[in-house]
Amino acid sequence: MNKRSLMMMPGMILFMAATFMEVRITADVINNITSRTADCSYSRSITNVKVLEHGVCVNTEGVPELEKEGVKVFRGEDQPRTDPGVSRIKSAVTLTRLEPATKYFLRAWVKTADGETEYSNETWFTTR
Image 1 (spheres, rainbow, N blue to C red):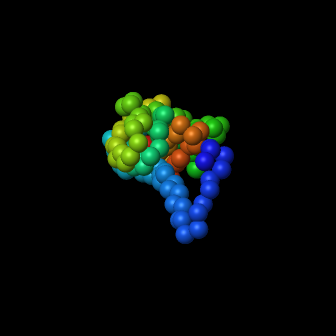
Image 2 (cartoon, one colour):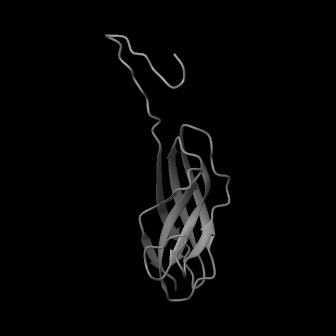
Image 3 (cartoon, one colour):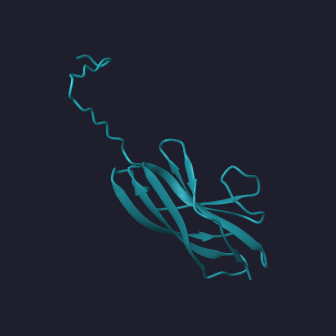
């Protein structure tokens, strides 16, 4: 049998296993909100995915995404986990350079080695 062909004999059953891959990300808590800053914690649950970077993005329009105009991006400082298997990791960032008395929409994000960007559900907060 070579790499291009697979010979099956009568009665043989072929099982092919796919690797389960999943990224779940959640913006957990926004606290210590001032007129110019806020602290945000977020969680990542990763199964068999290499994460290259992660963080939080905010804007005042809604549905913040990394490539959108007017979005502020805050990267997590801890090293992303790249080992296979399941990893559950909590991170935190301080959001800075915010405007007073402004409603911000927030989503946590991860970029994977496959070139995909995954986002959490959107949440919001208002600076003082």
